[in-house]
Image 1 (cartoon, rainbow, N blue to C red):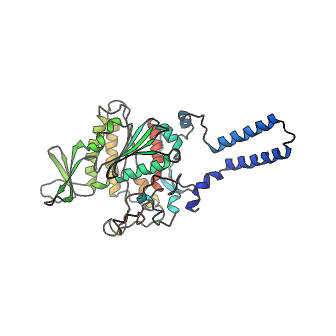
Image 2 (image 1 turned 90 degrees about the vertical axis):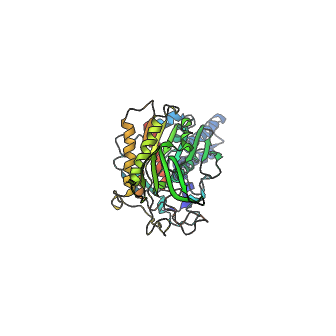
Image 3 (image 1 turned 135 degrees about the horizontal axis):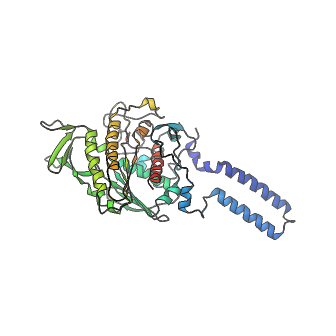
Length: 425
């Protein structure tokens, strides 16, 4: 495999560009040798021809509109399941590097923090029976011109947004216009396309409270109310054009689930006379309420697009996050190496069931729903996490096998996202 540091010059080796350079160099040598015999008009014409030919080879045509450019993108077979397939070697790698993206967060910069292997960067998702088009930042920005897109969820949702931000920054440098005190909620703006990209951080999507002890210290036990949405994201929904909704990893802890004054049960708690719920049952209750809220949101835009991302799997081996678990693999799994009966797949099924429930019912207005089904895809990528290469000086000795390196396999999520948004247009 090629070295990571050589990516930035890879586009200059494209065949069309090489042919152009060879021909132009021959033309220039001929002009020098015969310049005394050329008329001023012919000489000027040749120079102008060379200039514009080179401009069109090395740059996307500025005279093609966003709409026309989108029509030139590869079409996707609507009958093809983009999420059933396998990972294949890909020499091109990502559009960006860990040094070319100025917005790349330090904790996802695995290369900077000592990850020495590079093979994990050179794989690409290949659906069975069709092709997933490569991400094109110009086409994506043209598609979302004048829109507001919000990633709603936990830190993995933020990880997803950071990948998209890096990919889009290869076309236009965004402006950082907002960051809250805890750096959980961010807003970026692409002025040339009037496009706003933001994150809205939430643990459970619904209203939650952590129980505290006598010293007012958090106990790690939560109460959530599925009849009320977390206002951190729901208050901003009416101003949103595209919502990417996800939440997962906070559900793996003791949680009492309520619907108003009614207690429905509890996840991971041994309380007498209490209905015990599995995480996938909890997901089903939460996502049913979230989709109902979005579908019935009268103050939201009628053409609001909601994309649900399924759970992103962790890959801890030989322990959990706090008992020495790690993720040291350096290559993907094959389809026959993953557990299709895993807890992640059960949770994914719960999410899909709620998604299908809302899409099959009559919906108000023109709201559109799509699913970004990454669970099975990412179960095959145990090699894509930071592991120990995340530079957190406050948690030394703990490995990150939940989030994803940038660049890395998470970049494929935005190829899926672009395909979904094109299908929903």
